[in-house]
Image 1: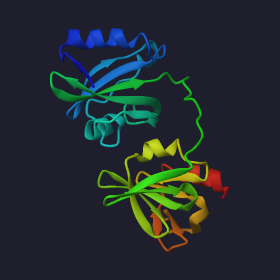
Image 2: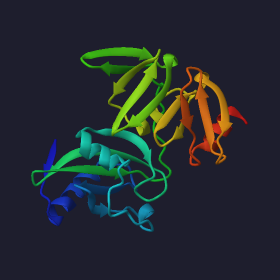
Image 3: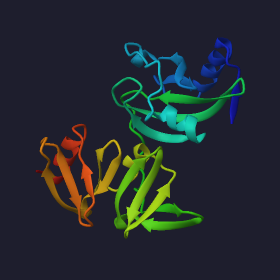
Image 4: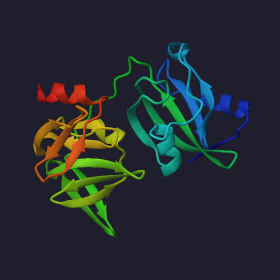
Length: 221
């Protein structure tokens, strides 16, 4: 765990160290408690203003809550538009903080083999579950759950992380849901013309306007 001085001088020293290994034109932000306390934009991000408060679904929020590194994921909460970012837990003058690296828009993460299974927890048991058996994944009460064979499992991954690491037959349909398209029974509209997905086991999942185009593109309807 990296521990640095919370003063501006200490943060600037941290920036100098990081510049030796982060990508060119990446920006650096530091978050603590509920706010961003430091922001050093690269040339590419000079025209963008960082949000003062930490969004509850942001990488910074996840790092502060879990005290775990968050791998490179898309995060649209920092600037209001998606950028690849990575987060690290650090200490600033004995306070929990999150170090956020914001990559330039030209950055493309190295493609890795998608997950073939997820390991889920039930009480004190851990079970590896093939992804083909998972019907959907849910974010609920700041935890992530996946469902397979009529059982519920807890995982340490966030939906943001899973979005980029699952096979192409998984699609994000809502801020709280990712689903396996092979478990879809039908898609209908409710009285407000919002789309509702019914799974083969009877579970109904809403589709938010933010993700409907991704679903249409994947299923071609």
